[in-house]
Image 1 (tube, one colour):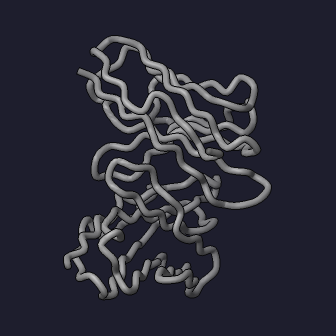
Image 2 (cartoon, chains in turn brown, yellow):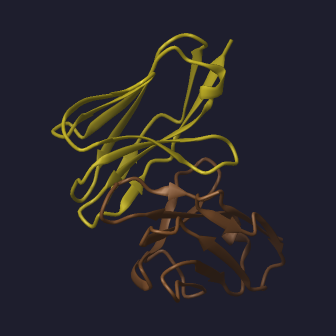
Amino acid sequence: DTGVSQNPRHKITKRGQNVTFRCDPISEHNRLYWYRQTLGQGPEFLTYFQNEAQLEKSRLLSDRFSAERPKGSFSTLEIQRTEQGDSAMYLCASRLRESSYEQYFGPGTRLTVT
Amino acid sequence: GQNIDQPTEMTATEGAIVQINCTYQTSGFNGLFWYQQHAGEAPTFLSYNVLDGLEEKGRFSSFLSRSKGYSYLLLKELQMKDSASYLCAVRDSNYQLIWGAGTKLIIKP
């Protein structure tokens, strides 16, 4: 399968714990995006990378959230000291900058904070 | 502020035609997208409009009027599998996607 993959697909954690999600984009795609989506809402932009550089981070993103893309391939999103309000679907998408405008989404990681 | 408006929910009958509207106010405009999202799944790309007019792709068509800040997605010959949420998104002056909350489309037999 050559699509965008995300792991884990589901994560249940207790409030205050740290969690880390992984995204593997389509191999030749140099742009990678993280979104958060809650029920009945559209995706909310969190951050994006061009290769290994993090070019933009949403002002809505607290300092408990951090993302990396160390080698310009896979990316990780870490949430520290999780809160119940962090419960959501975390979506990763990738795009090849030079060609299409379309973002290809992964299946998402559903986070439940209890 | 930036705003994308679309109806929360629509109902249509199998075999019929439905039009889902989207209006937007964004800081700049670099294209409008429609995505389909089935419950519990990731969004999948349907269409892209950057110039005024109608883009047709099989049973789905998308229309854009930049002067009116308006788009619609037209679905013909509706099938039960078309039951999903339809998300309108605009790429702003920073080339970031601003998303609407989505329109849940319910298809009845």
